[in-house]
Image 1: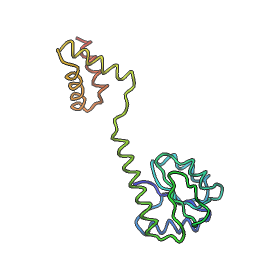
Image 2: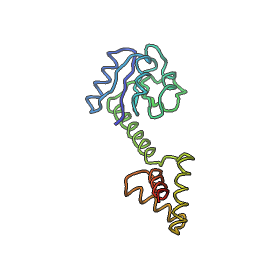
Image 3: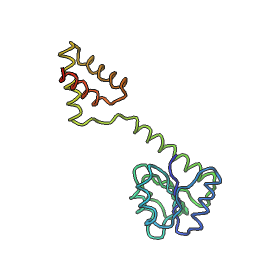
Image 4: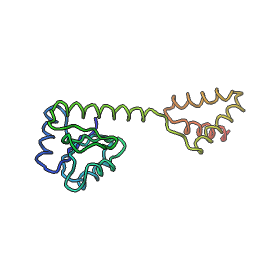
Length: 182
């Protein structure tokens, strides 16, 4: 599951929110009072939620939201007045905030992130032009030497790749090397 960071100007308030989260079964990764503490740490984390107020000691929440990595969301704890233009990726909870409402919001955001990350990881990576040329060369050799159609040659490389637990480019390179050695 993703990271939960509590960033509030008063350390005791941040610790209190952290304790509430822990009491509901969610561990916080970090408690801090400034953007200077928070921002360097974000680069080391894959995804998560930042719980913050309008300001931390050295930064407004809008500036902090600008620096959020792709798979981070923000939960802004604020009063009902004065916040009309909230940036994308920022969820607002107004005072008084109930613990259950905060916890369920954080859980919802983390689940959405997990789904997006899983979808991204399942998406096949785009091959470089060089890698595609290697696969095309192996297909061409298989088509000429074994009288295969292009689709059959592709399927052969794909199946060999899965059987040998290597990627298709490595399998295509092995095919080219084997045929070159003959």
